[in-house]
Image (cartoon, rainbow over the protein chains, first blue to last red):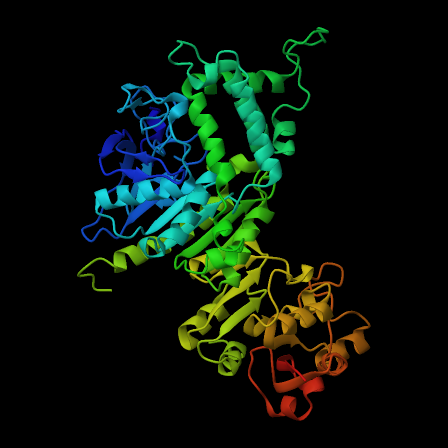
Length: 389
Length: 197
């Protein structure tokens, strides 16, 4: 843990495994008789439990959103730029909850857990879950924590879809919704990229129809390739140009198919390191969660109708060079919300980083989120029982 | 309270649905939320102003109104307001059309280029007027479509708009008797309340 990070960091954090024994009926029709969720929390829940904020993670994220797990950690949690004392999501004021979603591979029940019915690893037999299932499991986590209503639910990308679903499914259980770099459903192009990623994994000879752990192998090259494709879609053309350009590894061409350009070296490194820390079956499942999500489909394909029961105040943020979930996709959400006469603000933030911008400390983005969350915190304080306000 | 906002506030129906074009720092919307319990949105492109709106807890949508209001349905607002922005638009006439498409009525304010000081400046100095309230030179001004009250009313006539109400004030938004008598010569700012005929 870098010394310098101490002041505005939540510091050392310890995740907690929460077990649920009431069966959860999933969208696919199957029941999960019991399941665990790996959860991390920062800050203190106030006496009236009005200051809880749920953070929803994206495709490859997990419960570790802020702080460090040990003194030796080099990197903090995935959204440490925005979560911590004095930061946009201020842990001096909020009780922040982040969990690894069902089907994940960071401790929550998923393909790498043991199926209690068979005593074997779930592997590819783990049910394909949906955003709806996640929200149901998150609602049960809220019950477990005694949180009747979230002060805010915040998420980027696939996380933003969970925020949307919360606002539709449980309008009374959140006061504010922050949807960042997200979309109300995937486009054909988005699904196409996911399919390339899945094919990369499933065509790896070490995949063994998903039973690779039983065989003592890992489809590392397939998963790495999937991550490489994904990673390209997270960066903008400009960001790649600025970072690598056509910079070579050697001074001259080698006239072969080894690594010639720095961008190739970077992508391979990203692919390899990801395949060591992530589970291939979980990756397949996460991409399907994305593909399936389309809340309007339950309301005559009308997003305005889908959001008509929402009562939260919304903040929708997009980034100019994000082509995975472009500003137009966020505008679909913002337009549906103002057409339904909901409280909504929308920002299109100039940023060269592409989709990844949502994880970064971009001054305008951070200032907007900070200003927004300050009101959320003030309102949470005002709701404290016995408050003078 | 700014006099123009005070006037606009009086013309707004309590509890109505409002769209504020080029809403600036959100002061007017905040005022209308507080005093008139309106629900609505401000459209703005200036980053600093957008942040101020968020700080005021006013709904703000980042959108360039010169590109139209296609994402808003016909008659979806009771009143569409636009203060001190008409002269800075590329297509003020088209924006006016849009305002009365998405709103049942609109309120517009703008400075009068026919004011005697502007006329005197141009006729005596032979140069484009520069003043405390219009401090820009012709080449760097954001105000690219100046008009006089008479010009604006001619446009309203062409568009078959009904002027429900008009109030002429000075730059401090105070009214004075001369401006009421000869608005196009002595009025500095006008607040128009318009509906389709």
